[in-house]
Length: 248
Image: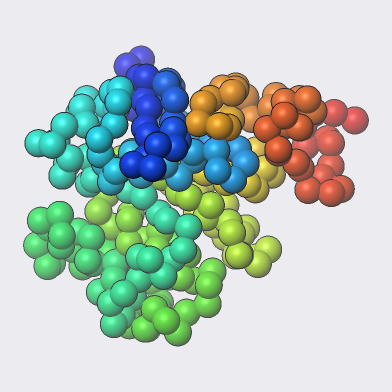
């Protein structure tokens, strides 16, 4: 099977000289969901920004769905790779929920009718189709998170990238989010500190720390490796049942 996303020797240094990514190599299959784990400052957000072509000026090579990251392909890549940022208010700025979710498709060249159809489908996928006429700033944080995901899904991406989507969610909203992501039929890259969520959604995980990939293996195997977890400042919640990891 050909790899859907391929990253070869990706490195990136910020203008101040900070080396955020150092020779990153990994690939994913079409339809595969993977988690990117690691402490704060590991380079996770920098990696996400590269996947959508936001930072540019990279060393190495990225290819998604056969498209190399070149200036002439970047428009199509941004349609193919949808990024959901950590703060939903970064993605919600229109007067109504429906207008917010239509914004992406219209920007990518869909007609008004197509954009509305896509938006309504996306809102239904996240369980927010009854809120299309509401003002986004009147929504709860969990509802805003769902609508932010819908704004990306409406453009029909083939790879969905989410940066800490569980942050600041109450338990019921977190459960809603997990169910939404499990039921999506597209490739997912999930950046999270929520290790139980990683275990539930992604069979495979990467550990990114100090700008390099320290581990690429089954999520369950990573969470069972106490030394690896400690070395990379990862910790399961207190009382997390070990039987979830296949241990008694």
